[in-house]
Length: 255
Image 1: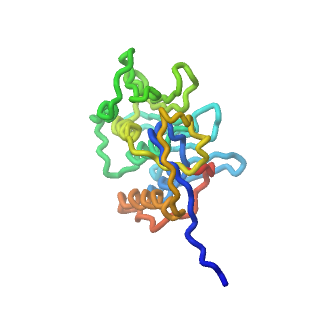
Image 2: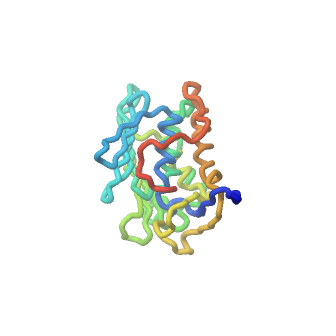
Image 3: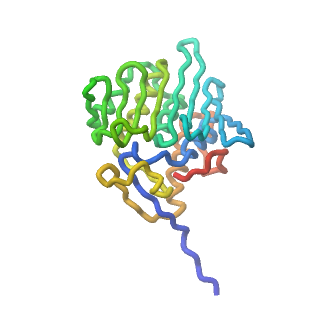
């Protein structure tokens, strides 16, 4: 007699704040760009590298697992109404934050006027000026955003220590994209992680809150599936995906 098997279960940690939740699964970024936004990808089979290119060939996102550098690098060529710009993100930059930036870039309905204030979402979330008055610092004092000159965000666990991650943006990066980045960065909602919690930047309970839950594998995959459908529905030229398709090449890290 065959005993019916129950649904496959997985353990998921819900981690807050998100800037200390680790990088997450690269597929959160690569699959929506490819499946829902029409970006093409190329891969050298001899190198652990992925390059995604926008349909208009103006933007190129490169995922290059470099332990000594930025893992994600986006280059956007110049347009008639604006110069070229770039953005890069370290390995432990949360994929949700990078995803918010790219969602704004790929949104065909986004208002692109550079009137957005990238710092307002941080102020609303309780980020305050540092002593130098050139930075806004998170309430837990682990992350700061540069307010003048080059725009960048840095997370560190101790003053003077090596950064946990850093995001860097060229001076001509559109303000509405920076605002999408800071809005997600300041979001207090926990993010899901299924990787070994020893990979988190810190397990210090004074800095990180973790709530572990056991969910079905189907439930664990729902967020990505829902994300694909929502992004696909934005553009009439790209129908919303019916479900999760095979992954484009990536690093294979779990979220």
